Image 1: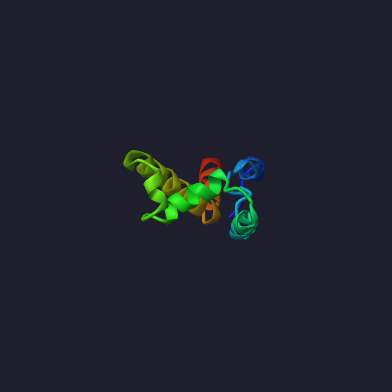
Image 2 (image 1 turned 90 degrees about the horizontal axis):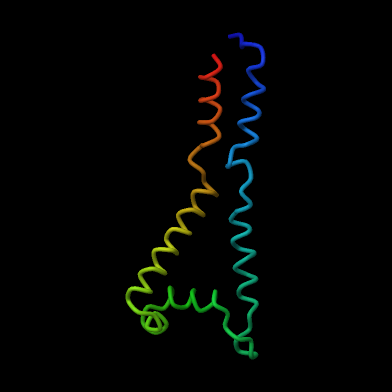
Length: 109
């Protein structure tokens, strides 16, 4: 199979612009950020942060969720689900890079 002159130039440009190249999110970053969050020592007098309170509200339906109204809790849950879905999509993209390659090659051939 032979390719037309200049076929790879547009492909390389599109690959460099592909959002799945490097999004900065990873399971390693998740673990590092979680470890940093847990550095807050509430037993030694550190004050709870908004992120800690959000985690407690979402995690403990019996006690901390009661700090929110039902509508507020539903909003928090919806936002948390959206964030989780987006995180999973970014660390396990649905082969967008392969689709970009295929689309570019199809246009150029």
